[in-house]
Structure formats: C-alpha cells, structure tokens
Image (cartoon, rainbow over all chains, first blue to last red; front, side, top):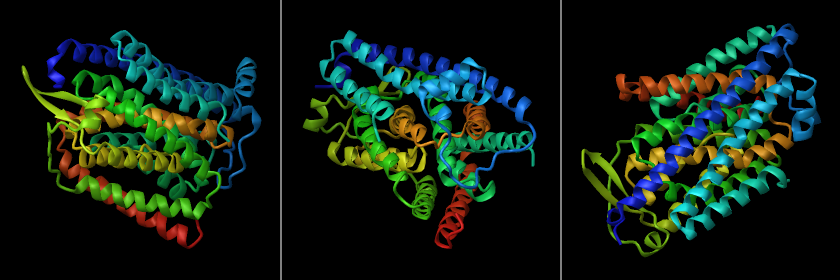
Length: 131
Length: 278
C-alpha cells in the first residue's frame, strides 16, 4: 500500500485540515477579542493596586467553574469576561477533534473515526471529570 | 507597581517571548514560566496556568498558516494525541501533588534539553520501508517537495514514538508547556518522519494536548484571569508577527541567541529550586 496510490484521499485530508485551520483561527481571534474586552474593563476598574501572585491560593469558585464564570459574565465582572475568553480558547482544540471525527466519517475511515473519538473522550473526561 | 503597569510590562515581555519562540521554532511557552517565576516573582502554579493558555493560543493561531503549507499529517497527529492527552492527564494531576521545587528542577532540565535539541545539527532519514503496524494504522503520507514532486514516507517504530509522546504529554501537563521539542524528537528521531511533517504536526498536537490539562488547571484555580490576560494576548501577538517575519530573518543566529537565553533560564530555575527560593 502506497500513500500516493489514492490522491483523492490525500486531497480530502487536506480539505479537513483547511476547514480546521480556519475554525481554529476564528476561535482564537474570538477568544482574544473577549479576553481583551475583559482586560480593558479590568484595568479601567482595578488599574491601581495589583494582585499578589507570589503565593498560591487557588482562585475563587467564581473563576474555577463554568457556572461561576457565566454568572460573573452576566453581571459584567471583568475577570469573568477574561475567563470566558479563556474557556472559548480551551474549546478550540476540542472543536478541532470533533471536526476531524466528522471529516473522517465523510472519508469513510472508520479506524480514524474511532481513534478521534477516543481522543475526544479523553478530552471531555479531562475537562469535566478529572480530579 | 500598579496593575496597569504590571499588565503592560507582562504584555510587552510576552510579545517578545512569542516572537522569539516563533522565529526559533522553540515556542514562546517555554520561556513564560521561568520569566514569570524568576523575574516577576509569580508562584509557579499561576505561571504554568498562564503559560498553558498561551500555548493553546499559539498552536491554534498558527494552525491556518501550517495547513496552507500542506506538510502536517492529521492521522499521525490524531493517533499520537491519544498518547499525549493521556500523558497530560497524568502530568496535570502531578502538578497538584508534586512540591514546587521539584517542578522547578524538572522545568530547568527540560529547558536545557530544549536548548540542546535546538542547536543540534539535524540529519534527516526518510524511509519508505513498509512497517506493518504503521501501515495498519495508516501512518504514512507524501510530502510536497517541489512542483509535482512528492516524497513518500512511512512511519517507523510506532510503539517507541507512542511512548515518547506519553512523556511529552506528561511534561506538557506538569509544566504548562507545549513540549514541542520532545514531540518533534518522537516523530523525527523515533518514527523517522520528515522534519517538516514532524514540526507542523507537532504544532497541531500541542493545542489538543494542552487542552487536556486545562480542565484540571481550571478546577485547581491555576488560571488567574488578570495574569493570564496580558500573557496570552502578548504571546499570541508575538507568535503571529514571528510567523510572518520568519522568511526574512537569518534563523540560525537567532536560534543560538534564544538557546543561550533558555540555558541561562534553565540553570537559574534549577539553582533557585535547589536553594528553595522558587
């Protein structure tokens, strides 16, 4: 079996990647725009004293859970807006794996639908369950 | 120092890190943690949180450019992401258990190793030897090397590559870095994939690997929004500028300079960790 024996498949792989590339860039720019908005609001409100990061004391629940972040965004808490941007950013690679599953399904490549699904399962486990 | 000044200094520093990271091919993430801990006196847990999000931003931001070149191999990337994401789960869990100075020492060693691999002369061995496991997993492809010319390649030593990728993932989760250096070694040295395929596929994998640590970092409170904000925006901007400049700059000299900076930071990390100052 030689990889160049079936050029249409190579082309389709490239199409999946092009798709994914555009999605990733859009996602990252959206995330950066949200983080920047939150950052400007944050500096406008808290431009004076800077927080102390020299000792670790886990961030409050407002910043460590999805519901905490979303509640904060609803009341326009600047740091929660920054966190929302970071969550969008973290979601971009996850979306990439989902798009690959769909792409491999179109190609009829069952093995890689399965492999991508395993990667997605590990990601979802890590995002929601891992302790 | 006010929050505004602190954010601006961090932003400018992060642009420089992202720029140098993109130009040297070492990634900006690798210097963010030592800069934050050694110079800005940030606790290493907040530092790896800020670094991890900037690593995801760089990987996703550069993806479109890499795809255009057509070197990356999504099957190789996806298969090996099983190893890197599992490793990242272990690594992220370790950060919540391992003492700070131990993280610092491992970080220092990884920095020294990254500098070493960046400077090492590169010998490419592409092979088309039909490796049965690689062919069953369809870990093969063809690399465009000119108009209408392609170089076929087949991955070799798949189990070794997979094992090294687990290590790369663990280091990524433990240190909040992309561990591009280890990923490239696994694909380039162990699996004998063409260098361009290794580097571009590695970039793709870095985002997915880092996302696998992000959940635990978030829940453990490592992501400090006001700290991550200037770092993530700066590294992203710097790496985007860097990837545009790449064609016009003499990379070899720059690589040596950046590698020396990394060696200095690595030594400093180890010394500070051993003396308990980190």
